[in-house]
Image (spheres, rainbow over the protein chains, first blue to last red):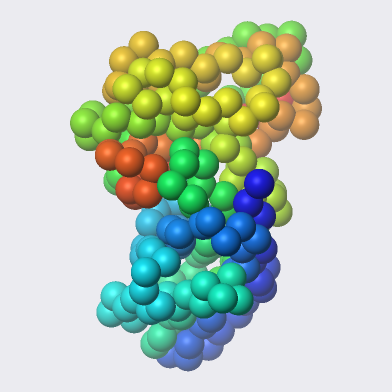
Length: 111
Length: 113
């Protein structure tokens, strides 16, 4: 089955700087890659996703890049703000019912 | 709020107890999920229901028993659990196909003593 690895597990960034979280996946059949943000006491919430027919997608301060050949994808957050502090999960899917998640990255924005 | 509610939010139970977790969504979504979230581990898919039919059972022990009486409600019945079953149990719902956004509830924090 699919295996998703996520790094780093924790990340501290000065407010205003950029943060990058990286994931690799094992199954080349995966073609959908969402990113979820989980704040304390809440369930995960989708922040951005990318499909395998594009290499990059951007939504305001958040961008995701995908390298199908290397089987890795990354989340980029620019101009970080305190409200960006949360746990971020990457995931991969092949079109079936199962979304395989990474182990999460705890992002802390230092004021 | 995502529109997915879970009750109770916290639950403490002994290994011989029977309890149930409830999930509810009135978003018109056709698929509902149960996930287990443990510290430093990926979210583990437990069950998926599509239009009330179970479409995925991810090798979950029989002490966890799901029930989906309609597309808006999902239950997880618990009996004779083990301490290692302590975790956050998340419910999610989804409109359309598998690559549509999943909307998560806040979870039930379960402690098994």
